[in-house]
Image 1 (cartoon, rainbow, N blue to C red):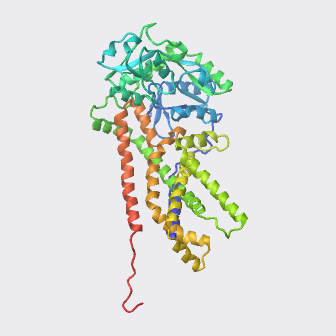
Image 2: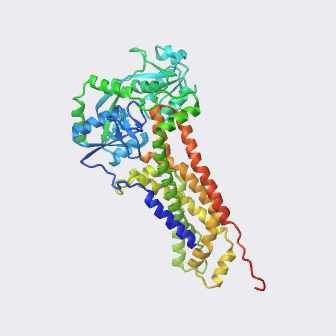
Image 3: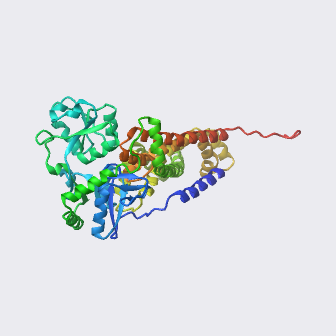
Length: 520
Protein backbone atom coordinates (compact mmCIF):
# COMPACT_ATOMS: atom_id res chain seq x y z
CA UNK A 1 0.00 0.00 0.00
CA UNK A 2 2.89 2.35 0.76
CA UNK A 3 4.34 1.76 -2.72
CA UNK A 4 0.96 2.52 -4.29
CA UNK A 5 0.64 5.73 -2.26
CA UNK A 6 4.12 6.87 -3.31
CA UNK A 7 3.36 6.03 -6.94
CA UNK A 8 0.18 8.11 -6.86
CA UNK A 9 2.03 11.04 -5.32
CA UNK A 10 4.69 10.85 -8.06
CA UNK A 11 2.00 10.79 -10.75
CA UNK A 12 0.24 13.75 -9.15
CA UNK A 13 3.48 15.76 -9.08
CA UNK A 14 4.34 14.90 -12.70
CA UNK A 15 0.89 15.79 -13.99
CA UNK A 16 0.97 19.09 -12.13
CA UNK A 17 4.15 19.92 -14.03
CA UNK A 18 2.80 18.68 -17.35
CA UNK A 19 -0.52 20.49 -17.32
CA UNK A 20 0.00 23.59 -19.44
CA UNK A 21 -0.54 26.89 -17.68
CA UNK A 22 -3.96 28.19 -18.62
CA UNK A 23 -6.05 31.07 -17.53
CA UNK A 24 -8.58 29.49 -15.20
CA UNK A 25 -10.91 32.42 -15.55
CA UNK A 26 -11.85 32.00 -19.20
CA UNK A 27 -14.51 34.71 -19.46
CA UNK A 28 -14.08 37.50 -21.97
CA UNK A 29 -12.96 40.97 -20.89
CA UNK A 30 -13.10 44.55 -22.14
CA UNK A 31 -9.66 44.44 -23.76
CA UNK A 32 -10.22 41.41 -25.99
CA UNK A 33 -12.64 40.44 -28.72
CA UNK A 34 -13.02 36.65 -28.39
CA UNK A 35 -14.38 34.91 -31.46
CA UNK A 36 -15.38 31.27 -31.81
CA UNK A 37 -15.00 29.28 -35.02
CA UNK A 38 -14.30 25.69 -36.14
CA UNK A 39 -11.04 26.47 -37.94
CA UNK A 40 -11.80 23.62 -40.37
CA UNK A 41 -14.29 25.21 -42.77
CA UNK A 42 -12.16 26.62 -45.59
CA UNK A 43 -12.21 29.19 -47.09
CA UNK A 44 -14.12 30.78 -44.20
CA UNK A 45 -11.72 29.46 -41.57
CA UNK A 46 -9.00 26.84 -41.28
CA UNK A 47 -5.98 25.80 -39.22
CA UNK A 48 -2.38 25.98 -40.45
CA UNK A 49 1.03 25.30 -38.94
CA UNK A 50 2.99 28.33 -40.03
CA UNK A 51 2.42 31.92 -38.99
CA UNK A 52 1.61 34.38 -41.77
CA UNK A 53 0.67 38.04 -41.94
CA UNK A 54 -3.02 37.09 -42.10
CA UNK A 55 -3.08 34.37 -39.40
CA UNK A 56 -3.95 34.45 -35.68
CA UNK A 57 -2.33 32.08 -33.12
CA UNK A 58 -4.51 29.47 -31.41
CA UNK A 59 -4.27 28.31 -27.80
CA UNK A 60 -4.01 24.64 -28.72
CA UNK A 61 -1.23 25.19 -31.26
CA UNK A 62 -1.18 26.32 -34.86
CA UNK A 63 -2.73 29.39 -36.45
CA UNK A 64 -6.18 30.29 -37.75
CA UNK A 65 -6.68 31.91 -41.13
CA UNK A 66 -9.44 32.49 -43.66
CA UNK A 67 -12.18 34.93 -44.59
CA UNK A 68 -13.71 34.82 -41.10
CA UNK A 69 -10.33 35.57 -39.54
CA UNK A 70 -9.87 38.58 -41.81
CA UNK A 71 -13.33 39.91 -40.88
CA UNK A 72 -12.73 39.24 -37.17
CA UNK A 73 -9.39 41.04 -37.28
CA UNK A 74 -10.91 44.13 -38.88
CA UNK A 75 -13.81 44.17 -36.38
CA UNK A 76 -11.35 43.89 -33.47
CA UNK A 77 -9.38 46.81 -34.87
CA UNK A 78 -12.61 48.79 -35.25
CA UNK A 79 -13.48 48.02 -31.61
CA UNK A 80 -9.89 48.84 -30.56
CA UNK A 81 -9.51 45.41 -28.97
CA UNK A 82 -7.14 42.47 -29.22
CA UNK A 83 -8.48 39.57 -31.29
CA UNK A 84 -8.56 36.13 -29.65
CA UNK A 85 -9.82 33.12 -31.59
CA UNK A 86 -11.10 30.02 -29.82
CA UNK A 87 -11.21 26.87 -31.89
CA UNK A 88 -14.16 24.62 -31.05
CA UNK A 89 -16.60 22.21 -32.66
CA UNK A 90 -19.67 23.51 -34.51
CA UNK A 91 -22.05 22.17 -31.86
CA UNK A 92 -20.10 23.97 -29.13
CA UNK A 93 -20.26 27.44 -30.69
CA UNK A 94 -23.71 28.49 -29.50
CA UNK A 95 -23.28 27.14 -25.93
CA UNK A 96 -19.92 28.92 -25.72
CA UNK A 97 -21.55 32.17 -26.84
CA UNK A 98 -24.47 31.84 -24.43
CA UNK A 99 -22.18 31.06 -21.49
CA UNK A 100 -19.94 34.07 -22.13
CA UNK A 101 -16.89 32.05 -23.14
CA UNK A 102 -16.75 33.94 -26.44
CA UNK A 103 -18.07 37.33 -27.58
CA UNK A 104 -19.15 36.35 -31.07
CA UNK A 105 -19.40 33.50 -33.54
CA UNK A 106 -17.86 34.29 -36.92
CA UNK A 107 -17.97 30.91 -38.62
CA UNK A 108 -20.03 31.09 -41.79
CA UNK A 109 -23.25 30.82 -39.74
CA UNK A 110 -26.60 31.51 -41.39
CA UNK A 111 -29.17 33.65 -39.60
CA UNK A 112 -32.21 31.38 -39.16
CA UNK A 113 -35.44 31.81 -37.21
CA UNK A 114 -34.56 28.86 -34.99
CA UNK A 115 -31.11 30.19 -34.08
CA UNK A 116 -32.54 33.67 -33.55
CA UNK A 117 -34.42 32.31 -30.54
CA UNK A 118 -31.10 31.64 -28.79
CA UNK A 119 -28.71 34.30 -30.12
CA UNK A 120 -28.80 37.63 -31.94
CA UNK A 121 -27.41 38.17 -35.43
CA UNK A 122 -25.75 41.14 -37.09
CA UNK A 123 -26.24 42.15 -40.69
CA UNK A 124 -24.78 39.78 -43.24
CA UNK A 125 -21.04 39.84 -43.82
CA UNK A 126 -21.04 37.66 -46.93
CA UNK A 127 -23.62 36.74 -49.55
CA UNK A 128 -23.22 33.66 -51.71
CA UNK A 129 -25.17 31.21 -53.83
CA UNK A 130 -25.92 27.54 -53.36
CA UNK A 131 -24.26 24.96 -55.60
CA UNK A 132 -23.90 21.19 -55.79
CA UNK A 133 -20.47 19.53 -55.66
CA UNK A 134 -20.13 16.49 -57.92
CA UNK A 135 -17.39 14.21 -59.18
CA UNK A 136 -15.48 15.44 -62.20
CA UNK A 137 -16.28 13.32 -65.24
CA UNK A 138 -19.68 12.29 -63.90
CA UNK A 139 -22.73 12.97 -66.08
CA UNK A 140 -24.01 15.30 -63.35
CA UNK A 141 -21.14 17.65 -64.16
CA UNK A 142 -23.25 18.92 -67.08
CA UNK A 143 -26.45 19.30 -65.04
CA UNK A 144 -28.38 22.52 -65.58
CA UNK A 145 -31.32 22.16 -63.19
CA UNK A 146 -32.39 20.36 -60.03
CA UNK A 147 -34.40 17.89 -62.13
CA UNK A 148 -31.11 16.44 -63.37
CA UNK A 149 -30.46 15.24 -59.80
CA UNK A 150 -33.74 13.36 -59.59
CA UNK A 151 -33.32 9.88 -58.03
CA UNK A 152 -29.76 10.77 -57.07
CA UNK A 153 -28.35 10.55 -53.55
CA UNK A 154 -27.55 14.03 -52.23
CA UNK A 155 -25.83 14.88 -48.94
CA UNK A 156 -25.96 18.04 -46.80
CA UNK A 157 -24.35 19.36 -43.62
CA UNK A 158 -26.08 18.53 -40.34
CA UNK A 159 -28.26 21.24 -38.75
CA UNK A 160 -27.88 23.66 -41.66
CA UNK A 161 -29.95 24.98 -44.53
CA UNK A 162 -27.76 22.94 -46.88
CA UNK A 163 -29.44 19.79 -45.60
CA UNK A 164 -33.06 20.96 -45.53
CA UNK A 165 -33.09 22.30 -49.12
CA UNK A 166 -32.20 18.89 -50.53
CA UNK A 167 -35.89 17.93 -50.44
CA UNK A 168 -36.54 20.52 -53.19
CA UNK A 169 -34.95 18.07 -55.64
CA UNK A 170 -37.67 15.85 -57.20
CA UNK A 171 -37.57 12.20 -56.04
CA UNK A 172 -34.22 12.79 -54.37
CA UNK A 173 -32.52 10.22 -52.17
CA UNK A 174 -31.83 12.35 -49.11
CA UNK A 175 -28.64 11.02 -47.52
CA UNK A 176 -28.17 11.17 -43.76
CA UNK A 177 -26.57 14.52 -42.94
CA UNK A 178 -23.01 14.66 -41.61
CA UNK A 179 -21.40 17.18 -39.27
CA UNK A 180 -18.49 18.46 -41.36
CA UNK A 181 -17.44 18.83 -44.98
CA UNK A 182 -14.31 16.63 -44.86
CA UNK A 183 -16.53 13.65 -44.05
CA UNK A 184 -19.00 14.71 -46.73
CA UNK A 185 -16.25 15.04 -49.33
CA UNK A 186 -15.06 11.54 -48.47
CA UNK A 187 -18.58 10.20 -49.08
CA UNK A 188 -18.67 11.90 -52.47
CA UNK A 189 -15.17 10.86 -53.54
CA UNK A 190 -15.90 7.24 -52.62
CA UNK A 191 -19.16 7.28 -54.64
CA UNK A 192 -21.35 6.76 -51.59
CA UNK A 193 -23.37 9.82 -52.62
CA UNK A 194 -23.85 11.57 -55.96
CA UNK A 195 -23.68 15.21 -54.86
CA UNK A 196 -23.05 17.47 -51.88
CA UNK A 197 -24.74 20.82 -51.26
CA UNK A 198 -22.55 23.80 -50.42
CA UNK A 199 -22.19 27.53 -50.82
CA UNK A 200 -19.97 28.71 -53.63
CA UNK A 201 -16.87 29.76 -51.60
CA UNK A 202 -16.81 26.46 -49.71
CA UNK A 203 -17.18 24.57 -52.98
CA UNK A 204 -14.30 26.56 -54.46
CA UNK A 205 -12.14 25.73 -51.43
CA UNK A 206 -12.96 22.04 -51.76
CA UNK A 207 -12.17 21.99 -55.47
CA UNK A 208 -8.83 23.70 -54.79
CA UNK A 209 -7.59 20.65 -52.87
CA UNK A 210 -9.67 17.96 -54.59
CA UNK A 211 -9.07 18.20 -58.35
CA UNK A 212 -11.26 15.15 -58.97
CA UNK A 213 -14.33 17.17 -57.93
CA UNK A 214 -16.18 20.13 -59.43
CA UNK A 215 -19.38 22.02 -58.74
CA UNK A 216 -22.57 22.84 -60.62
CA UNK A 217 -24.10 26.33 -60.67
CA UNK A 218 -27.71 26.96 -61.69
CA UNK A 219 -29.40 29.75 -63.58
CA UNK A 220 -32.20 31.71 -61.91
CA UNK A 221 -35.30 29.59 -61.56
CA UNK A 222 -33.52 26.29 -62.12
CA UNK A 223 -31.72 25.96 -58.82
CA UNK A 224 -32.75 25.94 -55.17
CA UNK A 225 -35.62 28.18 -54.14
CA UNK A 226 -34.04 30.14 -51.29
CA UNK A 227 -33.93 33.79 -50.29
CA UNK A 228 -30.70 35.73 -50.50
CA UNK A 229 -30.73 35.85 -46.70
CA UNK A 230 -30.70 32.04 -46.64
CA UNK A 231 -27.43 31.90 -48.57
CA UNK A 232 -25.76 34.71 -46.64
CA UNK A 233 -23.88 34.46 -43.37
CA UNK A 234 -24.01 36.67 -40.30
CA UNK A 235 -22.17 37.15 -37.02
CA UNK A 236 -23.83 35.74 -33.90
CA UNK A 237 -23.65 37.62 -30.58
CA UNK A 238 -25.22 36.95 -27.19
CA UNK A 239 -28.95 37.49 -26.90
CA UNK A 240 -29.56 41.06 -25.80
CA UNK A 241 -26.01 42.29 -26.47
CA UNK A 242 -27.24 45.17 -28.62
CA UNK A 243 -24.18 47.33 -27.93
CA UNK A 244 -21.77 44.88 -29.55
CA UNK A 245 -24.25 44.06 -32.30
CA UNK A 246 -24.66 47.74 -33.24
CA UNK A 247 -20.89 48.35 -33.27
CA UNK A 248 -20.30 45.36 -35.53
CA UNK A 249 -23.09 46.51 -37.86
CA UNK A 250 -21.47 49.96 -38.00
CA UNK A 251 -18.26 48.33 -39.20
CA UNK A 252 -20.06 46.07 -41.71
CA UNK A 253 -21.71 49.16 -43.22
CA UNK A 254 -18.26 50.34 -44.24
CA UNK A 255 -17.65 47.18 -46.31
CA UNK A 256 -18.80 47.21 -49.91
CA UNK A 257 -19.67 44.10 -51.93
CA UNK A 258 -16.37 44.46 -53.75
CA UNK A 259 -14.48 44.60 -50.45
CA UNK A 260 -16.11 41.35 -49.33
CA UNK A 261 -15.43 39.70 -52.68
CA UNK A 262 -11.78 40.74 -52.58
CA UNK A 263 -11.37 39.35 -49.04
CA UNK A 264 -12.97 36.05 -50.08
CA UNK A 265 -10.93 35.75 -53.28
CA UNK A 266 -7.75 36.37 -51.31
CA UNK A 267 -8.78 33.73 -48.76
CA UNK A 268 -9.42 31.18 -51.52
CA UNK A 269 -5.99 31.91 -52.99
CA UNK A 270 -4.41 31.02 -49.64
CA UNK A 271 -6.04 27.55 -49.50
CA UNK A 272 -4.21 25.51 -48.56
CA UNK A 273 -1.24 27.40 -47.19
CA UNK A 274 0.96 24.30 -47.01
CA UNK A 275 0.10 21.38 -49.29
CA UNK A 276 -0.98 22.08 -52.84
CA UNK A 277 -1.44 18.53 -54.16
CA UNK A 278 -1.83 15.33 -52.18
CA UNK A 279 -0.68 12.03 -53.66
CA UNK A 280 -3.29 9.46 -54.70
CA UNK A 281 -1.29 6.89 -52.75
CA UNK A 282 -2.68 6.70 -49.21
CA UNK A 283 0.69 6.12 -47.54
CA UNK A 284 2.42 8.90 -49.49
CA UNK A 285 -0.43 11.32 -48.78
CA UNK A 286 -0.32 10.42 -45.08
CA UNK A 287 3.43 11.06 -45.07
CA UNK A 288 2.87 14.46 -46.72
CA UNK A 289 0.27 15.46 -44.15
CA UNK A 290 2.32 14.31 -41.17
CA UNK A 291 5.44 16.06 -42.46
CA UNK A 292 3.64 19.40 -42.60
CA UNK A 293 1.16 19.15 -39.72
CA UNK A 294 3.25 17.14 -37.23
CA UNK A 295 3.53 20.14 -34.83
CA UNK A 296 -0.27 20.15 -34.46
CA UNK A 297 -0.37 16.37 -34.02
CA UNK A 298 2.34 16.49 -31.33
CA UNK A 299 0.44 19.24 -29.50
CA UNK A 300 -2.62 17.03 -29.62
CA UNK A 301 -0.67 14.01 -28.37
CA UNK A 302 0.55 15.97 -25.36
CA UNK A 303 -2.95 17.13 -24.44
CA UNK A 304 -4.41 13.65 -24.96
CA UNK A 305 -1.83 11.95 -22.73
CA UNK A 306 -2.21 14.51 -19.96
CA UNK A 307 -5.99 14.15 -20.05
CA UNK A 308 -5.80 10.35 -20.03
CA UNK A 309 -3.15 10.10 -17.28
CA UNK A 310 -4.77 12.69 -15.05
CA UNK A 311 -8.27 11.33 -15.51
CA UNK A 312 -7.15 7.77 -14.81
CA UNK A 313 -5.11 8.55 -11.68
CA UNK A 314 -7.59 10.96 -10.12
CA UNK A 315 -10.46 8.71 -11.18
CA UNK A 316 -8.73 5.80 -9.47
CA UNK A 317 -8.52 7.80 -6.25
CA UNK A 318 -12.25 8.50 -6.46
CA UNK A 319 -12.90 4.87 -7.29
CA UNK A 320 -10.90 3.66 -4.29
CA UNK A 321 -12.96 5.78 -1.91
CA UNK A 322 -16.36 5.05 -3.44
CA UNK A 323 -15.57 1.39 -4.09
CA UNK A 324 -14.57 0.94 -0.46
CA UNK A 325 -17.72 2.71 0.75
CA UNK A 326 -19.93 0.58 -1.46
CA UNK A 327 -18.29 -2.57 -0.12
CA UNK A 328 -19.48 -1.78 3.40
CA UNK A 329 -22.38 -4.06 4.31
CA UNK A 330 -25.33 -3.20 6.53
CA UNK A 331 -25.13 -5.56 9.48
CA UNK A 332 -27.82 -6.59 11.93
CA UNK A 333 -25.76 -5.43 14.90
CA UNK A 334 -25.49 -1.88 13.53
CA UNK A 335 -27.45 0.83 15.30
CA UNK A 336 -30.39 2.42 13.51
CA UNK A 337 -28.40 5.61 12.84
CA UNK A 338 -25.52 3.64 11.36
CA UNK A 339 -27.88 1.63 9.16
CA UNK A 340 -29.45 4.83 7.86
CA UNK A 341 -26.00 6.34 7.21
CA UNK A 342 -24.79 3.26 5.34
CA UNK A 343 -27.93 3.17 3.18
CA UNK A 344 -27.62 6.90 2.46
CA UNK A 345 -23.99 6.45 1.40
CA UNK A 346 -25.04 3.54 -0.80
CA UNK A 347 -27.76 5.66 -2.42
CA UNK A 348 -25.46 8.64 -3.11
CA UNK A 349 -22.63 6.53 -4.54
CA UNK A 350 -25.06 4.47 -6.64
CA UNK A 351 -26.63 7.66 -8.02
CA UNK A 352 -23.19 9.04 -8.93
CA UNK A 353 -22.16 5.80 -10.66
CA UNK A 354 -25.40 5.37 -12.60
CA UNK A 355 -25.44 8.97 -13.80
CA UNK A 356 -21.85 9.09 -15.02
CA UNK A 357 -21.83 5.59 -16.46
CA UNK A 358 -25.25 6.03 -18.05
CA UNK A 359 -24.61 9.30 -19.92
CA UNK A 360 -22.08 10.02 -22.71
CA UNK A 361 -18.91 11.85 -21.71
CA UNK A 362 -19.57 14.40 -24.45
CA UNK A 363 -22.89 15.34 -22.81
CA UNK A 364 -21.21 15.50 -19.40
CA UNK A 365 -18.50 17.79 -20.79
CA UNK A 366 -20.97 20.18 -22.42
CA UNK A 367 -23.16 20.36 -19.31
CA UNK A 368 -20.32 20.77 -16.81
CA UNK A 369 -18.37 23.33 -18.82
CA UNK A 370 -21.15 25.42 -20.34
CA UNK A 371 -23.93 24.73 -17.84
CA UNK A 372 -21.79 25.66 -14.83
CA UNK A 373 -19.92 28.49 -16.53
CA UNK A 374 -21.64 31.15 -14.44
CA UNK A 375 -20.53 29.43 -11.23
CA UNK A 376 -17.14 27.94 -12.09
CA UNK A 377 -14.82 29.91 -14.35
CA UNK A 378 -12.17 27.54 -15.65
CA UNK A 379 -10.32 26.80 -18.85
CA UNK A 380 -11.58 24.10 -21.25
CA UNK A 381 -8.51 21.99 -20.47
CA UNK A 382 -9.08 22.10 -16.71
CA UNK A 383 -12.75 21.28 -17.25
CA UNK A 384 -11.71 18.41 -19.53
CA UNK A 385 -9.53 16.87 -16.82
CA UNK A 386 -12.39 17.20 -14.35
CA UNK A 387 -14.88 15.56 -16.74
CA UNK A 388 -12.61 12.60 -17.48
CA UNK A 389 -11.83 12.25 -13.77
CA UNK A 390 -15.43 12.02 -12.57
CA UNK A 391 -16.42 9.83 -15.53
CA UNK A 392 -13.52 7.45 -14.89
CA UNK A 393 -14.21 7.52 -11.15
CA UNK A 394 -17.65 6.03 -11.73
CA UNK A 395 -16.18 3.09 -13.65
CA UNK A 396 -13.27 2.71 -11.24
CA UNK A 397 -15.66 2.52 -8.28
CA UNK A 398 -17.31 -0.57 -9.71
CA UNK A 399 -13.97 -2.06 -10.71
CA UNK A 400 -12.62 -1.61 -7.17
CA UNK A 401 -15.85 -2.91 -5.63
CA UNK A 402 -15.65 -6.08 -7.68
CA UNK A 403 -11.98 -6.36 -6.75
CA UNK A 404 -12.86 -6.09 -3.06
CA UNK A 405 -15.49 -8.78 -3.43
CA UNK A 406 -12.91 -11.07 -5.03
CA UNK A 407 -10.75 -10.97 -1.88
CA UNK A 408 -11.32 -14.03 0.26
CA UNK A 409 -13.39 -13.28 3.38
CA UNK A 410 -10.84 -15.18 5.39
CA UNK A 411 -8.45 -12.25 4.88
CA UNK A 412 -10.87 -9.93 6.68
CA UNK A 413 -11.46 -12.42 9.45
CA UNK A 414 -7.72 -12.91 9.92
CA UNK A 415 -7.18 -9.15 10.13
CA UNK A 416 -9.94 -8.81 12.70
CA UNK A 417 -8.44 -11.65 14.74
CA UNK A 418 -5.18 -9.74 15.20
CA UNK A 419 -6.97 -6.63 16.39
CA UNK A 420 -7.39 -4.55 13.22
CA UNK A 421 -10.51 -2.42 12.96
CA UNK A 422 -12.65 -2.13 9.79
CA UNK A 423 -10.72 0.84 8.38
CA UNK A 424 -7.31 -0.74 8.96
CA UNK A 425 -8.50 -4.00 7.45
CA UNK A 426 -9.78 -2.23 4.34
CA UNK A 427 -6.71 0.00 3.87
CA UNK A 428 -3.91 -2.45 4.66
CA UNK A 429 -5.37 -5.85 3.80
CA UNK A 430 -8.30 -5.69 1.39
CA UNK A 431 -7.58 -2.73 -0.91
CA UNK A 432 -4.02 -3.74 -1.89
CA UNK A 433 -5.30 -7.16 -2.96
CA UNK A 434 -8.35 -5.61 -4.66
CA UNK A 435 -6.12 -3.28 -6.70
CA UNK A 436 -3.89 -6.19 -7.68
CA UNK A 437 -6.90 -8.25 -8.77
CA UNK A 438 -8.42 -5.31 -10.66
CA UNK A 439 -5.24 -4.05 -12.31
CA UNK A 440 -6.13 -5.34 -15.83
CA UNK A 441 -9.43 -3.42 -15.72
CA UNK A 442 -7.71 -0.33 -14.30
CA UNK A 443 -5.16 -0.42 -17.11
CA UNK A 444 -7.94 -0.84 -19.64
CA UNK A 445 -9.57 2.35 -18.36
CA UNK A 446 -6.37 4.26 -19.08
CA UNK A 447 -6.22 2.94 -22.65
CA UNK A 448 -9.91 3.80 -23.07
CA UNK A 449 -9.31 7.35 -21.82
CA UNK A 450 -6.60 7.88 -24.43
CA UNK A 451 -9.23 7.28 -27.11
CA UNK A 452 -12.32 8.73 -25.41
CA UNK A 453 -10.69 12.08 -24.68
CA UNK A 454 -11.57 12.92 -28.29
CA UNK A 455 -15.16 13.76 -27.28
CA UNK A 456 -13.93 16.77 -25.31
CA UNK A 457 -13.53 18.80 -28.49
CA UNK A 458 -17.14 19.84 -27.83
CA UNK A 459 -15.80 22.16 -25.11
CA UNK A 460 -12.86 23.36 -27.22
CA UNK A 461 -10.21 21.01 -25.81
CA UNK A 462 -7.73 20.73 -28.69
CA UNK A 463 -6.62 17.15 -28.14
CA UNK A 464 -5.32 14.81 -30.84
CA UNK A 465 -8.62 14.01 -32.57
CA UNK A 466 -9.69 17.64 -32.82
CA UNK A 467 -6.32 18.60 -34.26
CA UNK A 468 -6.91 15.90 -36.88
CA UNK A 469 -10.35 17.37 -37.65
CA UNK A 470 -8.73 20.76 -38.15
CA UNK A 471 -6.18 19.33 -40.57
CA UNK A 472 -8.84 17.38 -42.46
CA UNK A 473 -10.98 20.50 -42.68
CA UNK A 474 -8.09 22.60 -43.95
CA UNK A 475 -7.17 20.11 -46.69
CA UNK A 476 -10.56 18.45 -47.26
CA UNK A 477 -8.55 15.23 -47.14
CA UNK A 478 -10.44 12.94 -44.80
CA UNK A 479 -8.96 9.48 -45.41
CA UNK A 480 -5.20 10.18 -45.28
CA UNK A 481 -5.58 12.54 -42.30
CA UNK A 482 -7.50 10.02 -40.24
CA UNK A 483 -5.16 7.28 -41.35
CA UNK A 484 -2.35 9.32 -39.78
CA UNK A 485 -4.26 9.88 -36.55
CA UNK A 486 -5.26 6.20 -36.38
CA UNK A 487 -1.59 5.22 -36.55
CA UNK A 488 -0.78 7.77 -33.84
CA UNK A 489 -3.47 6.37 -31.54
CA UNK A 490 -2.14 2.87 -32.21
CA UNK A 491 1.38 4.03 -31.35
CA UNK A 492 0.04 5.40 -28.06
CA UNK A 493 -2.12 2.46 -27.03
CA UNK A 494 0.02 -0.48 -28.15
CA UNK A 495 3.14 0.26 -26.04
CA UNK A 496 0.89 1.36 -23.18
CA UNK A 497 -0.83 -2.03 -23.25
CA UNK A 498 2.53 -3.83 -23.31
CA UNK A 499 3.79 -1.78 -20.33
CA UNK A 500 0.62 -2.49 -18.36
CA UNK A 501 0.91 -6.18 -19.14
CA UNK A 502 4.50 -6.15 -17.89
CA UNK A 503 3.48 -4.41 -14.65
CA UNK A 504 0.67 -6.93 -14.20
CA UNK A 505 3.11 -9.81 -14.65
CA UNK A 506 5.45 -8.32 -12.06
CA UNK A 507 2.59 -7.86 -9.63
CA UNK A 508 1.48 -11.46 -10.02
CA UNK A 509 4.96 -12.91 -9.65
CA UNK A 510 5.13 -15.26 -6.73
CA UNK A 511 7.81 -14.48 -4.15
CA UNK A 512 9.44 -17.26 -2.17
CA UNK A 513 11.68 -17.03 0.88
CA UNK A 514 14.56 -19.48 1.09
CA UNK A 515 15.20 -20.67 4.63
CA UNK A 516 18.68 -21.35 5.80
CA UNK A 517 19.47 -24.89 6.63
CA UNK A 518 18.38 -25.69 10.15
CA UNK A 519 15.83 -22.84 10.34
CA UNK A 520 12.23 -23.69 11.05
